Amino acid sequence: ESEALPFVASKVSQYSCQRKTTLNNCNKKFTDAFEIMAENYEFKENEIFCLEFLRAASVLKFLPFPVIRMKDIQGLPCMGDRVRDVIEEIIEEGESSRAKEVLNDERYKSFKQFTSVFGVGVKTSEKWYRMGLRTLEDIKADKSLKLSKMQKAGFLYYEDLVSCVSKAEADAVSLIVRNTVCTFLPDALVTITGGFRRGKKTGHDIDFLITNPGPREDDDLLHKVVDLWKKQGLLLYCDIIESTFLKEQMPSRKVDAMDSFQKCFAILKLCQPRVDNSCYNTSKNIDMAEVKDWKAIRVDLIIAPFEQYAFALLGWTGSRQFGRDLRRYAIHEKKMILDNHALYDRKKTLVLLVRVEHPCHEEGHYSV
Ligand code: DCP
Ligand code: MG
Image 1 (cartoon, rainbow, N blue to C red):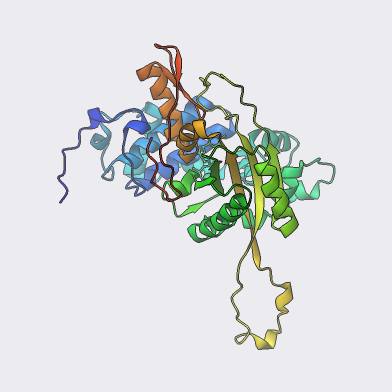
Image 2 (image 1 turned 45 degrees about the vertical axis):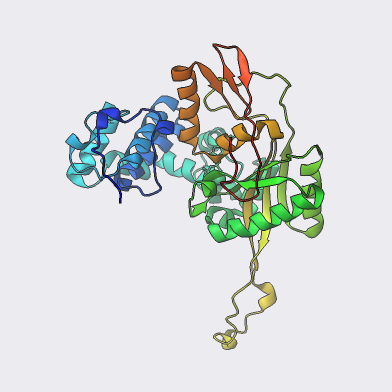
């Protein structure tokens, strides 16, 4: 039996890390429009307006009821004028003319296509757009463009990479990652993080956090893992970033800072048993050897030293907004600095360590 507590808008925290949000969103109508607005501001590198809409989306995702009148958002945090205008119009008209304008905007449409390619961000999109390029066909046709190794892979596996990763695919890749890592370090802890750890059913990639609780260290683990995949023909692309973590490094104050762990952005070849339809299309005489029986999947592998594991897990579990707000909350409400490596207490001027006791391979069995 659940006791329904009265909902008090003024008690809703401005920090998403202080709100309990489920995956079931009663206000998708609004949050979809906000996310389009936020993305358009991101493409314009207007971080303030972008965050304003992302924060508002996060608040409405938390609401246990659908908003039907303006009164429903009274007293809620993060509801600025720009946000309220969009809400008001959706309540009255059923849709937002501003979000619709964005969807039809030439610049937005081009940036949306460009950034859907692995390795292409806002900066590259801007460059291409300024050159007069508008579609992915334009990019492919322009032989003078110098694409990075990452972008080449992005175009080569484009169709697979834009189609979402399913939970079943994540589980299949998880087995591969676990098996390979454990060949080299049998006690290593391999945990799915990112959206799948939050219970999402699909994702754009699969994120793995790897740590070794035992006394044995292996700085070469990541290189050994990708080398084995190369030999097995499973590796379509890989970019290893070496750790830049310095001993006694202070946590970063930047709310969107990249961490300093050794990591690998990879594309794996996931073999999929093909469905045998041969009895239905004998007349077409399809050569099964030509049917693609694999899918390219984006995989991130992060290596964290065991003493930083708790912070890495917290950061890599996301969501992005949750992480941003946790760090803001630490700074403004606790006078502490949090990043993916440590928590620093500015009052006591020390770095707090979190010890993970009895790590277990089963999810949810760690206590910090
Ligand atoms: N993250 C981080 N530092 C980075 C990159 C990401 O702390 N340099 C965190 C924030 C994200 C999480 O890791 O919430 C996973 O990143 P993704 O971009 O893979 O995001 P999700 O897994 O949440 O979503 P998706 O389903 O799109 O993969
Ligand atoms: Mg992810």
